[in-house]
Length: 181
Image (tube, rainbow, N blue to C red; front, side, top):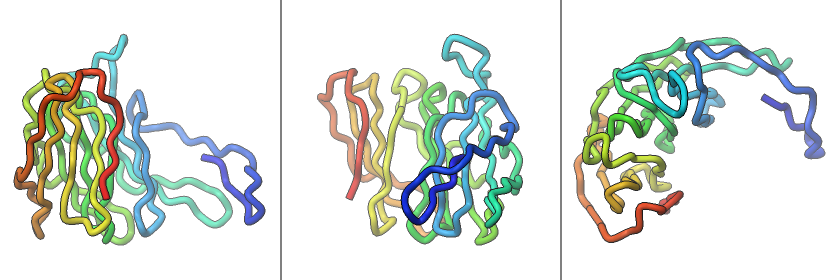
């Protein structure tokens, strides 16, 4: 973590050990909680089967990093990215090795709890969901299922469950990155 001053200059690096190997995706929620997805790889990009987790941290005004939730398991493989709903109540991760999306409930103080290890199945491990985004209004989640050449859309229900509403195919398996508005 690098603090950034009001003038845009980057301060001294602050390091903190992760709770599991291979920290991958990171994001801040609206309460300034830092979430880190832990892919937990065993080497050569291969994730420990069902070994992914996510940890949350609080960064204090003096730059100290404190753990909040430690290695909350998703029971999925090779988690990549994390995104929060705009209201900060929910978080989702994509799991490239499992071909799934996991859902979490977030408290205002940064505590995370798993809602569903498999909130959505993007097509199994062969689908390799590697990127996703949530719309600004927090109503929809779109995921790129690279190896099947598809983008899938899900409605985010009030309780955090996902309902598939769109499936667009025909993309090359080299598709990389997605942004939703």
